[in-house]
Image (cartoon, rainbow, N blue to C red; front, side):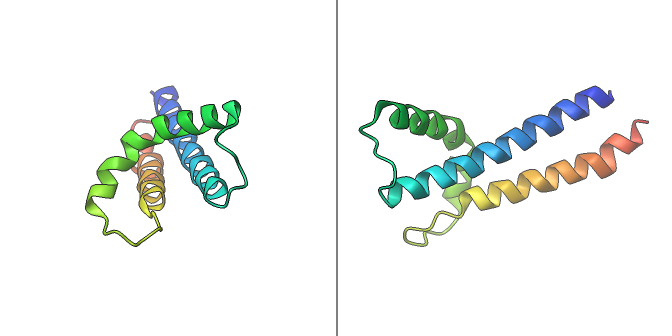
Length: 96
C-alpha cells in the first residue's frame, strides 16, 4: 500500500512541476521571448495547454477576473500541495 501512495505523491508532484513550467512558458510567450511560429515552441505550448487546461478550467470558473493575471495555477498548486501533505500525514501513517 505504501507504493500506491508513493505513486500518487509522485504524480501530484509531476503535475505541480507541469503547472510551473506552463506558467513560465506563458510568461515567456507574453513578453515575446518565445515565438509560436517555431514548430517546436508551438508543439511544447500545445502540449502544456492540453495537459493543464482540464485541471485549470474548473478553477477559472470560480475565480474573479483580474485583468491579465491568472491565479488559477497558484490555486491549483496550493490545493495539490494540501492534498500531498494530507496524504503523507493522515492517510499513509494510518496504513502502517
